[in-house]
Amino acid sequence: MNIFNPALLARAFLFFSYPAWMTGDKVWIDGLVEGKNIVDGFSGATPLGMLAMGDTGHLPSLMSMFIGTIPGSVGETSTVAILIGASILLLTGIGSWKIMLSVFAGGAAMGLLLNAVAVNPYMELPFYYHFVMGGFAFGAVFMATDPVSGAQTETGKWIYGFLIGVLSILIRVLNPAYPEGVMLAILLMNLFAPLIDYYVVQANIKRRLKRAKVALNSVQK
Image 1 (cartoon, helix red, strand yellow):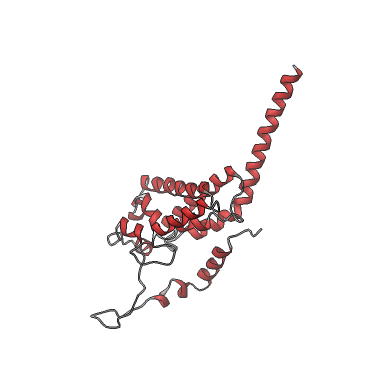
Image 2 (cartoon, one colour):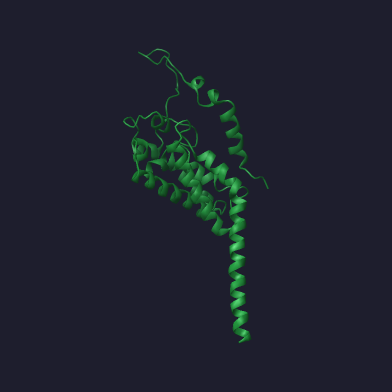
């Protein structure tokens, strides 16, 4: 009965406690000039990092981000692989399709709203780019659907997922210090999931009581 997703909580602790080791200067490799210091792999700016720095002219193509031929952390590079994982979760009945779908719906809604009031290149980015960049798809499929820390009621799952999508894009675009917002959005909604379920249950009780009163009055008449 944990309140927060354990994996995300651990990552948040490491990210904010040791930022330089997670994403800062200590993870960068320099000296790849004129064939010197050749290595098997190297670290560099991801598409989200480019956007955070205002560099929209060197973004990879939408297809390369969808397939996964881009730099990035595990879980944020190949949307194709994530969709395969989503199919397995849905076929086995482990993941909730309502949460997955509503996360993408919330992300699309916030993306379109930001497009309508755009004042910078990041806000002008088409909403569907957010789905294939960073950990949005991974979070929607594997983290938001955690059956313990997520919403339990069927209506609550729609609300819970939609708000995760909205907050993810909102944090990404409007917070220049933290270009990825999925982790914080899911953790925040983990906290509010019981409250969402509570009000959904209370609304159902009120509707049933109202129907019972109407039925009782009709019988008495």
